[in-house]
Amino acid sequence: MLVAFAVGAALIEPKFPHWTYLYGREIQRLAADPSLRLPKQASIAIRPLFALLLVMFAVFGAGRWRDRLRLAVTSLLVYVPATVAADVALAKLGGVGAPSPFMARGNVIIGVVGILTTALVVFWNARLPAGVTVHRRRGVPRQTLRTAALGVCVVVSAAAVAATVHRQGGHIDELKRIPLLGGTGSVVVLFFAVLPAALCLLGVFARAVSGRVGRQRVRPTPESMCFLVPAHNEEGLIGDCIRSLDQAAAHFDGRTEAIIVENGSTDATPYEAHQAIAGCRHLNGRVITAPPLGKARALNVGLANATADVVVRIDADTLVTPELLRRMAPHFADPRVGGVGVLPLPRNDTGWIGRMRAVETFYGVAFKRAAQSVCDAVTVLPGATVAYRRDILLDLHGFAEGVNGEDADITVRVGRRGYRIVSDSRIRVYTDVPHSLGQLREQRMRWARGLYHMIGRNRSAIWRAQGIRGAWMLPWASFVMFRKLMLIPFACAAALIIAVNPSTLPLREVASAGAILLGVQLLEMAAVLSWYRRIDLVCYVPAYLVFRLLVTYYAVETLLSLSLIPDRSVERVRNPDSALLRPAPAAASATVDPADQPQPTR
Image 1: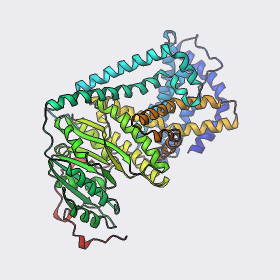
Image 2 (image 1 turned 90 degrees about the horizontal axis):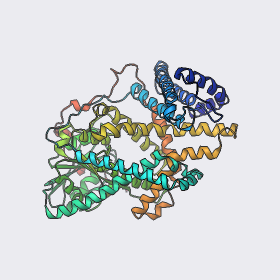
Image 3 (image 1 turned 45 degrees about the horizontal axis):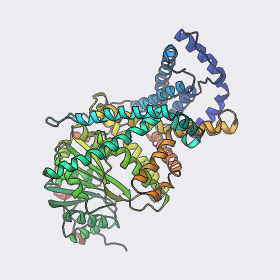
Image 4 (image 1 turned 120 degrees about the vertical axis):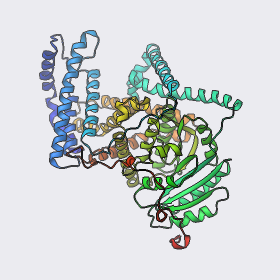
């Protein structure tokens, strides 16, 4: 697909000047604006390229030819009228300061139209799980204070960016000449860089104030917490995980238990888990079995057998710190809190993938997700370690089965129920990371598909405008996802066009355009790593560019793997919320007898 798009772009590139003249005259006629000018720098290149890319997505999509044809036709029927309407509107508004439709800022606007079109037609034509409706629970207070906090931070960030551009405009113009930092000249890019920083600083201030108040007023914390660990072929990892849970239980004053759910392992995972449970001194635990129908089914079987106030979901390849429960419990003293997440760092960050994952985690979780937590806009708490109130999970009928991204889905549904989602970066756990590019590919394709499934299931939160999460973060997550997908195809097309005719697209301008999305992020990453005293990782920040391109390539591959369906009323993933969550039958929840399990091979 990438080769076909790049070749197609190179073939039509010489026609851009003539098409610009013809299309410009037509927009001039439709807008009734004879003053619309087409200078030498004017270009409509983004429009035919986006149309070509939409067609390529359809041609190489996963479905029958008539399904692909329907996707192509739908894409063009949405994109072409929307693009023409946007161009006409920009031409009409030119007299009041709107950008020219065929210059840089106008082309950026049309690019946004193309991204939105791609998201719309993909979600309309792809096979996605059936949507769910989640109503706000009566009696749960609204997060008005956090909405106000977001508004204050938006105003402060906009004012800070405006003052910076006004006073330091000359220095910013100098940064534009550096390819890696070209994006620092955009006020929009600067705003979205400053906003999360402002939210994080507000969060630090709020924690300091609440800490002082908390010392004066003791609030009750959960009396019991249960570790829920799904395990499938985790030999060599599950034992260490359980022993770390025992250490965490030793530092918690309430009752603790652990439910290890074995679901179809073919190695010695059940035996190792039973031996580790038997050696625990502070933790009561048991090993039960579940049908080998996926992680979500194992989680639901364990949830049906849990009795604690709070359920802490743990991946079997994760090591928790001794203070885990002691730091999680105070959050649940607030009845408005429904879920608490942590900072899942790599267990081993010495390899290239481990280092890149560490950089990504500090930036994405310790910075961006921490900012989202301040205004209650978190869309995912990773399943490596996350805690929820058990009654809320039961009220929502457990984890979604038959879909990817059940951790993101349950996070959003708990938030839609009206409860606050907290991401506390001070609580750290250490989880396994891919050891090869093949494992990285499998992980990222699963994560990308999980994002599609989560948004597909919770799309009603968008049109119902359920909090900041539904009204802003879910649409924004969709936009960002498809914006990233455009990076690889357009980079391939630009590389081939430059190779064919180097004077067409100057390399420096292309690099600067790409830096609009990456340059400021690299600076933020370095600052975040310095804040968390991981100076050893700062030198690896430039290598994140390669990692970003690689995982984006896997995201494009995921898009092409989404099945197309002829009718939206059939072939949809069963809605698991329609089934009641019941305790597992005796055969499915029996305690494992170590004598019946395979012995460790080492």
